[in-house]
Image (cartoon, rainbow, N blue to C red; front, side, top):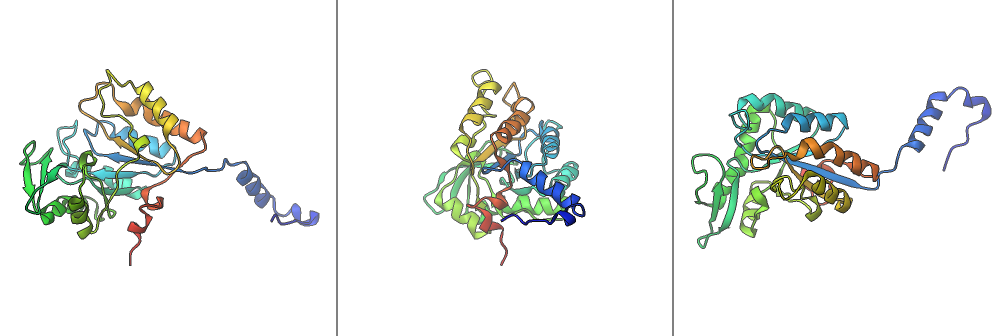
Length: 263
């Protein structure tokens, strides 16, 4: 119910009246879209940060210790200022496993076979116990504390999205909830640009994304010749905003918000 302001008092509350008009003029949000960013070559790291700042958007990041275009790794000390800034801006930051361990399969003896993208076993299949798999997730947190003084949020994303009941249970045992992405949320930024142009990928995202969807974007992909983010990130944000969508972190996602609540 709207309050009725006497005429004699109206002149004394111009600020309140202006605020009310602004609120009425503001577009209604018909639901949240959840932008998430996985580490990669980091070629688009600065652009992503600048674009999110420009549009006042908070997103969610998943970190692995990946080789970057600078010749270092994304969890090296040189990246501390970048991650501290994202932390200060209020983004969610979770684990992507330290060595970017892609699950191959559950082994017969209760262990897990994985293929790390980085580290001493890069490119080779290795066998991890559930505790060792969990350590791959927690190791990102340990490094993040060294870089920023703060812990990660209690969420993780399996490299390539490959999980199993055993992997998910191992992660839960050390306090991490898995976050994948929505079918419509696959940006396609890791697909070959010769077959999947930025324009076609953008059109697909704008056509298919709906409230509640989690969008997967990488912070740079080595193999894609025509990088996705410079052409598509801002148009995606503007296009979704024009459709009435808002943006939020996974803290506000109904499927994951309870994971952020501390006892």
